[in-house]
Length: 410
Ligand code: SAJ
Image (cartoon, rainbow, N blue to C red; front, top):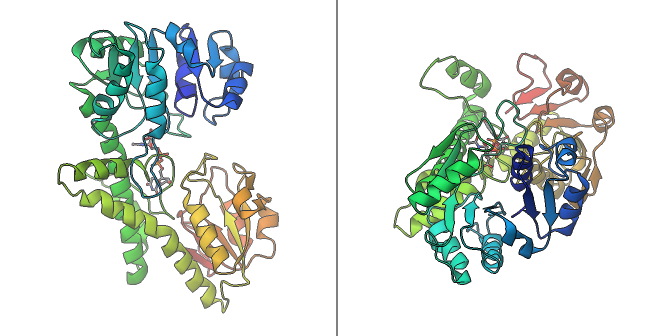
């Protein structure tokens, strides 16, 4: 259920292992595309979808799920505008599935969420079917670990965590994932699996916030944060490198920690690390705009009326995903300050909201008062950027080793 960036690769993986897969999605466009063997997920090449067309039955008919031995739910779990968990899609999926749920089916939740969701929210919805979890059907939680753009680890080679509603539920789910994952890690209960996934992303969010806060301090102290991080990273143990940057984007890191913070309030446990990390990372686009304004000012230019070329707008290098991308916030703030914007990003042909289309690097730099490296995709001609504008501001540290008067780094 849910043929998105998690569901589609999962469906294709099971097909590639020879299984018949029913791929349900509420979006008929996605279903048609998948049925035609076309991929709309960057990390899943269309060849792989085309190769399993006979095995993958894409459908918008919920009733088709009645024929499945196992159902994996991979629907979005975003935040509301007030940064609280939004389980709307999950509730809709649970209710719809309850209407067709069969005895002996296994239901696995893959969507990232707070500990207790599967037991307290999904199971009651499924039991609307009149069947009892753990007795008539099995339930488990197994968090997706899709890392967009990553190629060194795949679904098969990334250990798969699984927690079961009962031991029998766990055993069923373990044998399911053994089909597509080399290393399945059984846990003692649903909640441990739910929280483990959140810990993975909170860990990144907190450590990214730490180096971002240091970057803001270094800016005041006149110390090169990149030299500092490079130096610390020479330590062969006890230190894990994270890079400062213009902020934290994507569908997970800006979202998942708030699922945990929200849940922790029910246990009177303030999760200050999480909240603080969220605040620091959210402040970075504002800090970056302030840094650019100061640099322009050094060139006796105001932001208003300056032509600013943005190099890279997706949330991280190597992907075309714009979700929560810090570049969008930076561009919005610059537009509010009266800057004239242009951008170059081969992964993102258009920014409809900003009424902009990606230009060639040369064209974007042409006549620019400043070039700003926000996301440095692999293969970016950094020297070309440095030579192409009277002021260059690098928020990703990719110009390290290039000495130039008109170059400013985070
Ligand atoms: N970022 C930094 N500095 C860093 C690392 C990342 O500023 O040192 C920024 C990136 O530019 C980006 C954001 O943080 O804007 C997130 O990028 P990411 O690569 O850290 O994470 P995601 O959101 O693309 O994927 C994460 C991954 N989680 C972990 O590695 C623990 C991925 O494996 C998860 O599957 C994914 O979240 C998810 O679906 O939860």
